[in-house]
Figure (tube, rainbow, N blue to C red):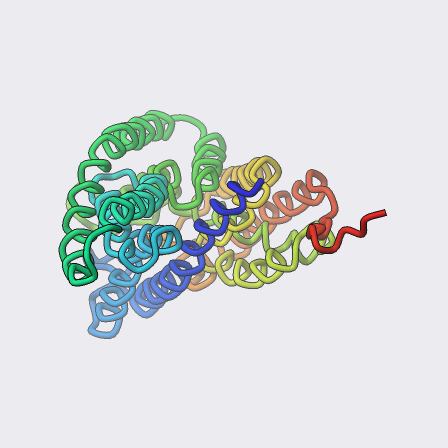
Length: 354
């Protein structure tokens, strides 16, 4: 249990540090498309006026920092300040190599423990070498080691993402309800990881035609409606069943409310880390229901992001919101049924010896 608590603490260090980047970046990108709503058919939709172009750039930069920050602060929690750069580099390598969220989690832990190992190797060096340790050994040697470590990680995870994209391409020729359910379940499976990204990138690709024009996309409507249930289902569950969550998760539910409304799946991560067996099936089912309903209703979206801020870009706002609301409710109710009431951990010092 002690080791799991340590892993949880390191994960939460990374998660709490990268969530602001997701929230800020996602909202700025949403505003960019909202302010450009009148040019939805333009090939450069989202950047046809100076304001939307600026918002799109700033939001994209914020989102681009998400994985390096996650990897960096997981490593920082393990190996302290010398591990920060190594972990951030691991996150960048995961991003560039295609292993995404899962690759970054691996990179953060590997980087942290690599730096701990380096500290052990150089701990007997004279004090006069402290500067050498900080400026050369930890960043340079650590950077080389994390770069080598990420080669097999990316080699394993990236082809899996490519295979999932091919699977969705084949599925898109069949039932829109089935496609919506699959896209929704994939989006919820790893909350920003390779499976989520495969569904998202597939949906984004359907926004443009061969000549580069932006079109209304049913797949984007499906994943947009499904995404409400991921963070939103966790948030709603904390309000409907507060006794089944720790105080920390109830607080996380407040942040997840905002993320559920703004197409940010990562708000579910604290809940999944704490109770994966109950939460993952719940949000996957809820998101699948939301995506399937959007497919059934023929919902389309002309922006590469969902949530409430791109509602004007949806072809049927009420059915879009209804699909998302039903999926969110399904996820929350399932969590309420699966989870046991939260019990306050008993500290050893509080145990009264008979």
